[in-house]
Image 1: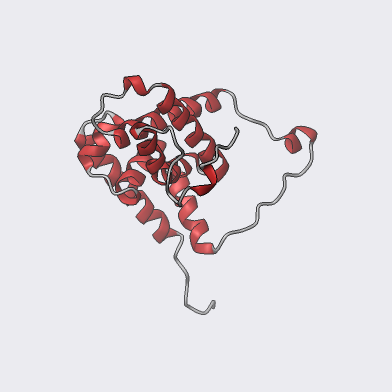
Image 2 (image 1 turned 60 degrees about the vertical axis):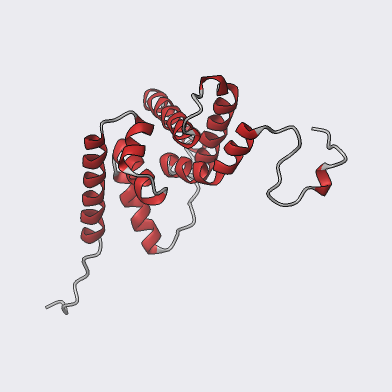
Length: 184
């Protein structure tokens, strides 16, 4: 994309000329949307792909936005994109090139122990419970906002959040059992 003469003179946080209020508002949501996408997708790369698809869909379908709550609308788009991708991947699982060739898969560098435990516990949650947990605890939305975003009754949001918290609590406590007694 060619650069205009004013592109180099922009201050940090200033958007490119020609962007309207809608585009500026979507750009302002990118950090929150990225966090949510990565929490849904469980990997940074897949989360970034999901974010890109979400922003593309929001920009191309802006005529469908009712002008009420852009944040809730974009989160709903992201959630639906993830659900569609999840369903597709369940029907058509990917096979790595190494596995297909019969080679051992590359080892992933290990993270600190606590982060691994938390990530494993989060990954074990059902998708619908994890989404509610992330929206309420990480993104700071209220129960009603999450209910509106995910098109659920508020009671369902509350029960999914409760189940997610309890399951995390149980898993983190179970994996934290260390015997301090000397073996006999």
